[in-house]
Amino acid sequence: MAQTAIQAIATVREGSMLIVTFNRPEVLNAFNDEMIAGLQDAIRQAERDAAVRCVVLTGAGRGFCAGQDLGVFKAREAAGAGEGMVREHLRAGYNQIVLRMRGLEKPIVASINGIAAGVGLSLALAADLRIAADNALFTLGFSKIGLIPDGGASFMLPLLVGLGRASELAFTSDRVDAQEAHRLGLINRVVPAADLPEATLALARDLAAMPTRALGLTKRAFNHAILPDLAAWLDYEAHIQETASRTQDHREGVAAFLEKRPATFRGE
Ligand code: T3D
Image (cartoon, rainbow, N blue to C red):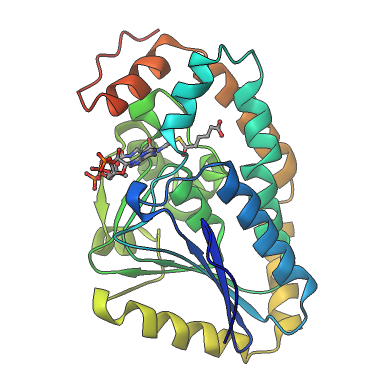
């Protein structure tokens, strides 16, 4: 087992598997820019290294990933960040990650060990397979801070669960438990929490022992059939997220979260 970094994104090689761990457990692995860059690097590593034949994404501590670090939004506002900031952050950051995840011609398994929220859930949806602990929770969360589902979730979610359920999950940001997520088709498998690491490795080991080229070409065919305009969709999603981010309700949602109080939205 070769460990390359213990940082906000920790990568460990285990045989032909690359295990990537989101590693800011004190904030439920909410993503900052170091993590965005680290995840981009980890996927590049998987692209370059022919000996890597399956990638696993998981979280340290009690969460999988709570999405974008909301402290960053507050800091941006305080710094008077100009128009286009959110759009460019998405385009250069999460959109590149999703494009690389979908473009990687090797299986990616999201091993969801706890809550997956915001773009944390989007990243899980961009993986090929999702296995979750029975105590994992899922929430879009974007509507609670006046945003739209991004990181590809605006099209991956309706693809996986259908438009009606996607609308309900996105509008309400209700938390869904692992059993319900499985019933909805959001995830592939649920296992007892204590068994998640071993069940994930067993699944990843099986996938890594399959004909990698055929699996990669299958993924390419699925992408071509179902996500042919992925780059353009992501670009549009970033564009309308920029619009959402300029609303009063977005500012209120973020402030309310950081001040640990309920938000009062005015619809503007
Ligand atoms: O510019 C761009 O790129 C735009 C991109 C946007 C992408 C997005 O992901 S937007 C959505 C961002 N995420 C959220 O809105 C989710 C926010 N978090 C929550 O709603 C809740 O924390 C959870 C539902 C995820 C979990 O709830 P719970 O009760 O289990 O835990 P908690 O107590 O709320 O959180 C534990 C700690 O993590 C807490 O810190 P503390 O009080 O112990 O010091 C909390 O503040 C922190 N934390 C959780 N999520 C975030 C966070 N800190 C910063 N950013 C977070 N996203």
